[in-house]
Image 1 (cartoon, rainbow, N blue to C red):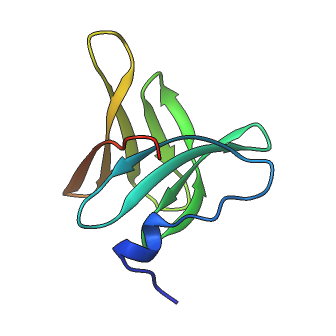
Image 2 (cartoon, rainbow, N blue to C red; image 1 turned 135 degrees about the horizontal axis):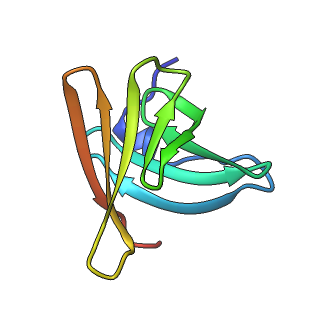
Image 3 (tube, rainbow, N blue to C red; image 1 turned 90 degrees about the vertical axis):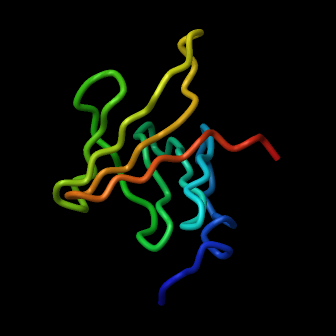
Length: 100
């Protein structure tokens, strides 16, 4: 049961989870970052919810998808402003979504 970009933008996060932010991966949908049970997770369009594991301050591995890396970009103030998702030779960048 796959989801398209429209369905992926409407994310149901587990009760008790704290959403940290979303990043627009147009046209692929919205990547959502959240904490559940004190662990960081992503909701990736067409993949679902996956736990991420820190490699350094702004780079995380997705062990559920071998070779997938998540990198957070920071602006001059040190705030996260964008994300890159890399799997093999494919890299997608998303800017931080405006809060709803």
